[in-house]
Length: 405
Image (cartoon, rainbow, N blue to C red):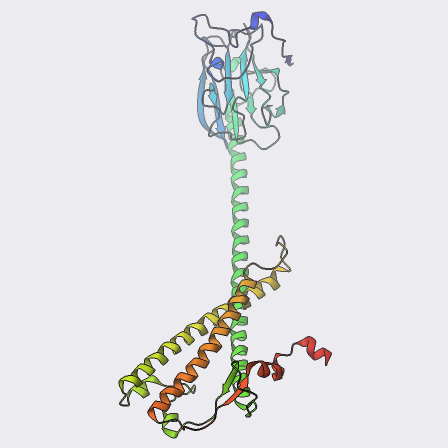
């Protein structure tokens, strides 16, 4: 039977009454809760009087701590997560409140009462939730849990003389501990199963990620190969484009013609570019050496631009692949991918610089061969406007233009 919380009276002005020796009650420590003991509070009677009474804190069936309750000096004991509690749950029950509940002794009685201080998650006595601000009787051998709405981590067991246990439903501590150990084994098995499940999920996720990376590599390699084929076709098309001059404007480009001598062709490598090592085998003047060094610098810049172009193309290919796969994923935010627009602008800038550098390199090669006497003089170079080349290049027509025509 529970006892309702009595209304405070003028005689209850002190938060905790002093003991006979003049010492304050433990619950009245600095920063403690606002609690007024009832009028029937006092030292317990037999068989609790003169006996050792303690609280055992059990975690997963194992006794982690035992706290003695000095019922000869005090009749009120505070339980909570705060360090100044008589029974501190810090490190044992994270769901408990700082000041969770009180244990209140009754004058001349063998019962100790539990008083919930309106804790966050409530208090359970022998598996039954108790009301806040209500005194509930508790006998030796009974247990408290400090979380009524969630699974609790810690159990508090009231220990004392066996003859103070209730006649009905006597708790066998050995059986109780054996049951707690069994529950602990079941919980441990469930935790191990959950851990294995998470390991399997992670393994599956890593395997999927590895597969996606392999797909991206294959697609990137295929895209680079297609880009190379298109570049070779474009080079052949540019070599065969109109051989007449459409104007000598500033934006005109030179169409390379085969005006090199046989000696000049011997200085070229397989890619049709000037081999600087073969050139240096000749006796060069100081001016010719300067032309070669300048050409090497231009070629180095072209190589760096080609590497940057390849990197940006691979990044765009990878991003496009991820965007395509993300359409079927859950919890993926909508909208354009970050960085794709910036990479596209960078790629266009690199291509512009690359085109200009290749033109400068072609002119530098002509200057070197002309200084060596390996390039025919007096031949007119065919110059074609870039705008007209783009206008007449049908490879630039997209799918919508094809559909229109």
